[in-house]
Structures are given as C-alpha cells and as structure tokens.
Image (tube, rainbow, N blue to C red; front, top):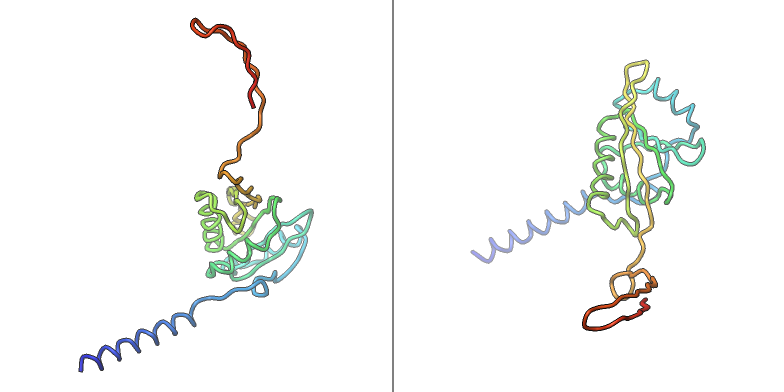
Length: 182
C-alpha cells in the first residue's frame, strides 16, 4: 500500500513539474520587436493622446529615431531580451506613461547596475529623471541606461598597468642607491 501511495505521489509531482514548465515564459528575439518606429515629435504626440494604462515603452535611439515596445510591465523575460538586443556604448533614453512599466524596467536596470552584474558581457549604467507633467495631466516617466562592454581579466586574474619608476635615495645603513622599476 505504501508503494502505491509513493508511486501516486511521484506521478503527481512529475505531472506538476511538467505543467509548471509549460507555464514558464520563453521569449526570443522575434517576440521582442518594436510595435512602431517613429520620430521624437510623433512620440510626444502619442503621449498627449495616450491612455496611461497602455503598456508602451519608448526607446530613443540615435538622432531622431524612437522605437515603441509593448507588454514589458508584466514580462521580465521580455524586458531582459529588450536590454540584450538594444545597441551598446550609446546612452538610450526610455520614456513611458505607464507607471508599472517604468517601475519594473527601472528596478531591473538598477539591480543590474548595483550588483555590478556581468550582463552578457556588459556592465549596465542607469539613472532616472524626474517625471514630466503633460498638458493633459499624464506623467511621462523618463530614465536612461547604457551598456558598456566589460574587459576580460588577464591570465593572472588581475590586469596590472605597466609603469616605469625611477628612484634615487639613500639610507643610513645601505648607502646611496639609484633604481629603475617596471
């Protein structure tokens, strides 16, 4: 009887883990595509017409190009994929009227920065600006981040800078000396 109960418990556990695996989120590059590409002026017009409940994140890239992404507030995997696919060594400005999207994205970026996390070979630097109040009463949450390529440590584990030093000195017991060091 104990063997049958144990076997039933094992089957239930395996069924539960299989169900839980199906519920986990799988996000690829194809899932994290911009819903729209626009200029800065068009983005500002969207802010005036936009409902604050709409989960849109605007990413300002080089010059006047802005990409809009949807559904980031509830999906950590989607936020991570977005951070991975955005360009490096360039300051990226992020804007949203949705407070939940702002809080989740800002928290994730600041966690990566505080932990000095090696994020796929990059170091993340981030900061937030004060929200901008619009004419229609909406707030635009503004923040930025940057990915910088991390340098790999040398073979000894630490990179030592090479320098040359020249010293002249003397001592009571050792006499005068001249030295050159690397």
